[in-house]
Image (tube, rainbow, N blue to C red):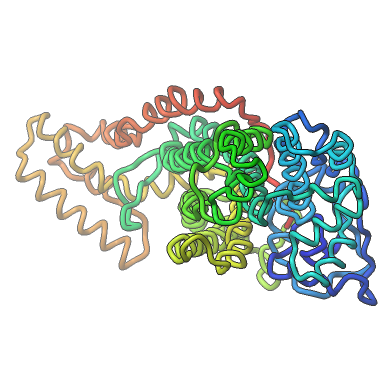
Amino acid sequence: MAPAFIPHGVNPVFPTVASRRRAATVGRPGLAIVFPRRCSTLGASLRPQSPTATMESPVPTPATAAAATPVAAAAEPNYVSPLSTRYASAGMRANFADLTRFRLWRKLWLALATAEAELGLEITPEQLAALRDAPDVDLELATAYERKLRHDVMAHVHALGDQAPVARPVIHLGATSCFVTDNSEVIQMRNALDLLLPTLWAGVARLADFALEHKDVATLAYTHFQPAQPTTVGKRACMWLQDLIEDGLRLEEVRAGLRLRGVKGTTGTQASFLALFDGDHDKVTALDAKVTAAMGFGESVWRVTGQTYTRKQDFTIVAALAGVGQSAAKMANDVRLLAHMKEVEEPFGKDQIGSSAMAYKRNPMRCERINALSRFLQSLLINPAETASTQWLERSLDDSANRRLAITEAFLTTDAILQLVLNVSSGLVVHKKVVAKHLAEELPFMATETVLMAAVRAGGDRQTLHENIRQHSMAAGARIKEEGLSNDLLDRIAADAAFAPVHDRLEELCDPQHFVGRAPQQVEDFVGGYVRGLLAARNVDGSAEGDVRI
């Protein structure tokens, strides 16, 4: 039985933001839930180890996510996001799970208390040890507190206080809710980028291999989806490749620029911390720096905030994710068009069924899914744009519910798209004979100028030859369109005495390689001279496979 997912307020693996506050479902008859008290691998990897060690959270992996996945006795009776059940990888779902989020809150509280103690506040080693060694997040206890208090952060403050009583007086000391919520979300977003980037670059590696392999395979190019001057299959793939590379570089840039909210107090003035340190501004500044460094962000902290960090950061992140959707959709659309012409196809499983009625069908469902998900991803961009522009003064809470939905689902959707891109690029099939057939049907028209110039150089009259080719071309076009027959333009030229000097050269003059320009060399230059260097610098695993479950 496939594992069912528990409502979002108590689930250690992300199911849906929309169900976040269904805490009342805990203990509901008919739904057996296993709550991990000290979740094995994922739990150990996300727990704070020592007050002096870095608090940077490791990126969840599919293996650790699987270890933390709860098992229900029956299928989940409530709505669960398809991003969890069908599309996003286990690692990404685990990264945005509530359990991951709550563990990050505890790391932040430990980092704050540790820094406060180092700067002279009366926080004992025993209290720090209690925070560091507290049992894992008790989801049932926190849920019970949230029902009573109607405040998620304070529910977890009280739950942690019950689990580590000696530390209870110093938990969340001087902080506001956004200290844990904003900072933990930035950490989750950074970890999410660390999951996305290897998948993206693995897809780039696979497409680079594909482009090189097919750099010399001449094919019709299309403008306005009408036949145009030939290119090569590999050169076309380089266009997809270049877009994805731009996305990868942009995501890396965004990741490098991420900044924590830091330790700023209720409205960004740090007044509560200034009071704690008896007006010592230097200690408050040092506190902010210590916590930022402890969470693995070095000096990357916002210098000025209101209650929250500027929501423009969210827009910058989601815009970069939406760029991935644009590139992937372009590639998927191209593959779908080529699949219609039976030239290039996405992978198709041995037992895969294309249609419940038409058994012969080979629908490009992976690329269609890329297009569907990309459309959804790009639609999410308006949310952080509007949120950033409509925040009132130091903060208004109309950002919260929107961000829970838009940002999380933007990452999960991007993850699902890149898993598909990797899967498709790893198994693209080129039907070279079909490609050659389509090219041969159009190439005679494109070769007429070459034939004309060769015949003129052999002593022919340019105007007479031009008129003869025009008439032959019109007749051949009518044969194709009106009679549904093959292109016989070269046969007509071969039977025309005016072209006798080049009759024995017609095949040579119409060689497709004469019409692709520098396409093969462009592929070699681009992939060999640029892409390979990018991949080598990132130590990309070229053997990675896309996680496509359905």
